[in-house]
Length: 375
Image 1 (cartoon, rainbow, N blue to C red):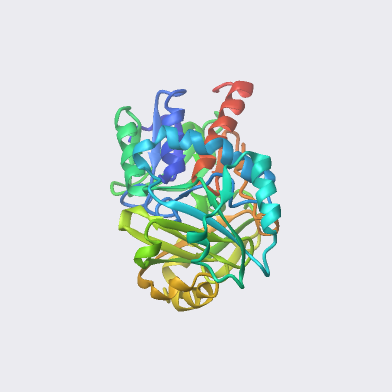
Image 2: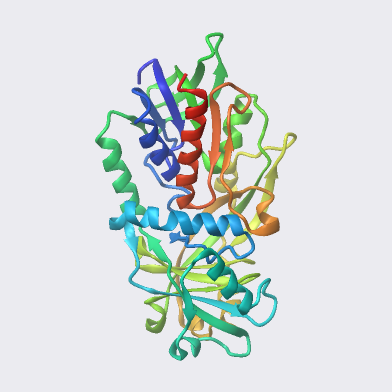
């Protein structure tokens, strides 16, 4: 590594890769630091691989609308990473749902999301006593491995210094207004300076802040599990979401040729919050937590609505720490977090709740630099 960079990005998930690629168009010397031994190994891989088109957020108009806007941008930019060879169904339960089928249909028309009544052949898959209505929608999945390879190929076309096994321990302000980063790599502990630093470490955002003696951002973390299952042949070409409330979803997971089963009640095993007085290292917490799967509970509850789930076979689980803003628990929103100059000049912390949020982040970065310049 050099001793000085124009900009340093901390975190090599999809957001870190994409933002570093964009910032390379503005700056000459760009450094990307990833703590793991490869990129996109954590939340960028261990997720439902859904490219949202607005259907998932009928209680948050802004989140749904931004998904509708970003959906075509993402699918157009990454066509080789998109999987749309399956039929996507959204089902609305009779009881305990926070919306009715009529409300769901009206909301989707309001944001311009394509929606039609599902044919009888699909509706018969569901328990009629528990499901009010079923809709055909336009949604797709992405392959996180192909997406990683696409981004690494893009990075390789530049001279971005992309480093793995490289952890930023802390960030400090110098008298010159530049930032000093203490970095641990296979070569030992060293320091580099930069004009700008972007903290894109998702569940580790506050660890970087705490180690730098900066204010902690109020965040909620959940230790989560999504079951990887083999579904019966009738369900192999389907993605099904039963919502909106304590329900479940099955989605194709392209890298494993399986489906994920997630459940609002059982996917989160437990949660904690970061506060000024209590900030837990989420990576350490993840490593300490026993991985005892809750597929039996997920399956048993889902069978009430979709009986064929009983014929699924459990294969594995995707474990991760999911991080959201506390407000999201109230309205199921997924806003981007963009904390400009957080405690230090030109030190910015960024977090998005969905993969297509990255466009909203880049738009905000454009605005920030257009107003304040690059210095």
